[in-house]
Length: 275
Image 1: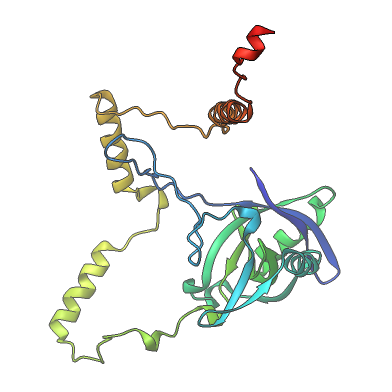
Image 2 (image 1 turned 45 degrees about the horizontal axis):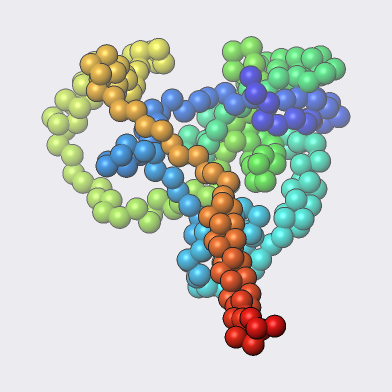
């Protein structure tokens, strides 16, 4: 597995060198856009909204828009310094709580934690302590230039770190429009609904659930491949500018100028012929 973060995590005086590996993956089928006329892939360019010119990566700076069309420009050195200051800190578990105390709306992304060199014993100690106590650890960590709130818990035999949203990142439910007020529910309707819930109640088995749309889309793609419903295109590679035309133009212009500057041959006079 690819390592996305390397550092250490501590609880109390126990320090554990660890590596983080992404625990989940997005299996969405990515479709590319082609030009309908020639079937060539569509490319996207970064264009300046002011001068309409294409902008290279080295000519782009980062900025924060604090008001309409007003920006504070931040240079890479400043951002890198802030990032370094926070990344160098060991991740400390600041609290231990029960998992059920955290609403699922807070959870964001999962990472497997693996012990780094010399960290196996401390890793096993934290894993055992979490299993025996039935608690999870709450910590802060800097990942990809963003400080994250995270929880550490046991998943099978592995320590799992899950980033969670800060409270101000979760929108207020009161802002959701058109939520009905408490309605009078007919007892017969409620009893029927509860009976349906009871009939559909089972033990959660993740293997039972599949992405039917992705499966159907892949079947369609394979069917069209076997039926020769395919197109072939060759992307034009950018070529180095040629100086041949300019060179020929320059040479021709030079010849023309030379002809104009060259003095016309002098005509011999009759006197000259006599002599």
